[in-house]
Image (cartoon, rainbow, N blue to C red; front, side, top):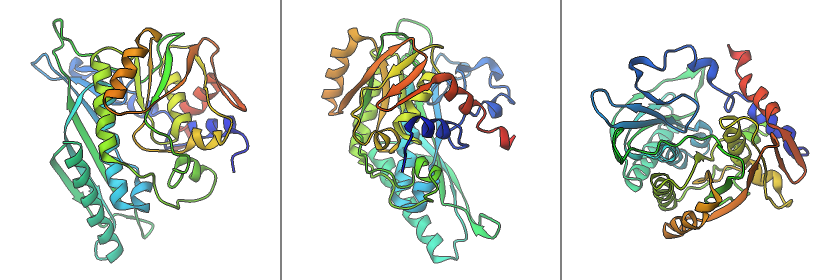
Length: 345
């Protein structure tokens, strides 16, 4: 039971699964060869210049092992969908994936069932999203303290951008951060408030991992990715960020934290079940921001692809995230987010 949406959001932003990875990636030179186009943490996918060419690629890696534990087939489909969605949010077209299938002891019939179901889910998603597996490996007998790990079919997707880095057809590399006051914030996709199984908030509230993960319709997912990529290519959006772990509240917070300092937003949400709306993890959703001048064309593109849209609000200079019954300063969210891994360092 969530009694304080704002406090729960701060706790989520400070959780190890959601907090900033800056303490990790800053220990490495992410500018080797000066090929990095979008800096770490700024977008949903890494964007790199292809050496000795004028083309760029996008790469993302994902897997929610809680989903796979609850439903191996559905969880594996989510892994492919999320990583290709991240590539699409950068503006690139996903072309292929590689995987690392990490499981426990296959002599245990339950573990072998998890493995088979996950592989079937991967195959189903790859066919639906036109992203063939071009390489990969399998790691079995993984355990900690004599207990099998959660099934973790990690997926990496690679995509390419239309156009070249030089010339009039240069790609539009999309970041996740909100950019300007008065830009409108919209949600692509549908929120189902019953999608709580295996979520970050379920774990945070001490309810363990139970229920079923959100269902994913791969046809809907494909339409969503096609729509957002067309929007980005046509320069209709100023930011794009997928909505996954932690739900809408976390996605919006990350857009504020990675965007222009000082921005804020009042979410236009109904007070009914606002906690579920903020923290459920319905599949196939993307948060975008855009100029009000582009809303009409943006809506036409979404309608063409059959993607539902919801207006969430207008960016302001308040430096806070507000909604029915909550008001949180962005800097409070930032402190929790940036220090999430301190205890693990």
